[in-house]
Amino acid sequence: MTPEKNLHVRLQQSAPIPLNVDFTCDKNEIFVIVGPSGSGKTTILRSICGLYHAASGKISCNGQDWIDTEKNLSIPVQQRRIGMMFQHYALFPHLTAQQNIILAYGHIEKSKRATRARELLNLVHMQGLEARYPHELSGGQQQRVALARALAREPNVLLLDEPFSSVDQQTRRKLLRELARIRHQFNMPIILVTHDLDEARMLADKMCVIHHGRTLQTAPPAIIMTKPVSAVVARLVGLDNVFAGTIEKHDTETQTTIIRWHEYRLTTPYRPEFEIGSEIDWVIPSENLILHRRDRPSKGERENPIKGSIKEFIPLGENSSILISVNDHQQSLSMSVPTHVARRNRLDTGGEVSVSLLTEGIHLMKK
Image 1 (cartoon, rainbow, N blue to C red):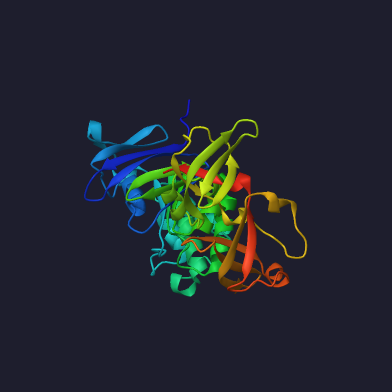
Image 2 (image 1 turned 90 degrees about the vertical axis):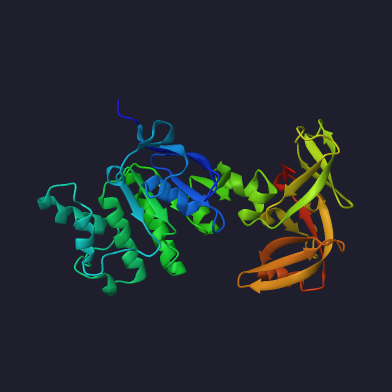
C-alpha cells in the first residue's frame, strides 16, 4: 500500500531562534504560514529543506522520516526531492528558460528532458518563450519559469517562500490563479509562506498563524478570520475590532450570552464555558457592522445598536473606510461601506452615526 502524500512537521527549541510548531499538510493541500517578520516562517522552510537543524523535532513526508532528532536521523537535502520557489526567482542568468528547467530534470533520461521542460513551460503559459534568457522576461514570466523549475523535480513537497511579493498586484493575481489551477495535477503538499493576508485567504486550505516561532492557531482561513483563538491572533490577521468585556449572563432560552462593554450590553452567540463575571476579549469583523441608514431603518438596527461620532472618514474608490469613536471612549470601531452609501447618508468626519453589531458576528475569546 502506497503511503499518503503528506508532510508532518514538529520543531522545538528555545534558542537561538525560538520554535514550537507542529502541523500536517496533506496532499493537494495548500498550507499557508503567516506571521510578522522574524516570527520564524523562513526558518521552518529551511528546516523542511534540511538547510537548518532545530534542536528537537521530527519531519516526515510520505511515510519517510527526513529528520528525527531522537534517533539522530537526518536525510540529506538532495534525497528529499523538494521543489523550492524563492521570492527573487533565483534563475540562472546565463541559461534560457528551457535550459533552467532542464537543469532540474537531472533525475530522468537525458533524451526526455527537453520535451518535459517544454511541457512544463506550456503548463505555466510560457509557450514560445523557451529560448529567452531571464533578463528578456518580465518579473511575472520569470516567476512562471521559477515555478516550472520547482515542479520539474517532481517533488514530494513544494515550498514557496514569499514567491509573489516582487511582482505587481495584477501579475500577482494571475500567478495566484495559475498556482490554484495546476495544484491538483501534482498531488503533493504545498507550503506557502507569505505576509500578504489577502493572498493567504485566497489560496489556503489551512492557515497557520505563528508568532515568536510558536503556532498560535491552525485552521481554514474562514475560521481564523471569524473565530480567532485569541486577541493576539485576531490582531496578527488584521482584525481591527478587538476589545475587552465581561460576561454578564447566559440565556439558555435564547441560546445567547450577554457581555458588558462599557455601558453597552451586547448579545453574542451562546458561550456557557465562560464563567459569569469573567473578563474576556471579543472581536467582530468589520463586515458584521451594519450602518443605520438615515432615510429608513432596517431590521438589523435592533441588534446591538451603538452610537458614536466619526473619528476618521476616508473615501477609497468604491468603498470608504470609517473609524467610529464610541461615546468618548478611547476605543474605535472600524468598518467599510460603499462610497455611494456614505454619500447618501452624508457621512463625514465629526458627524454622528449609529451602527449595529450583528450578534452572530461577535466572537468571544479567552482573556
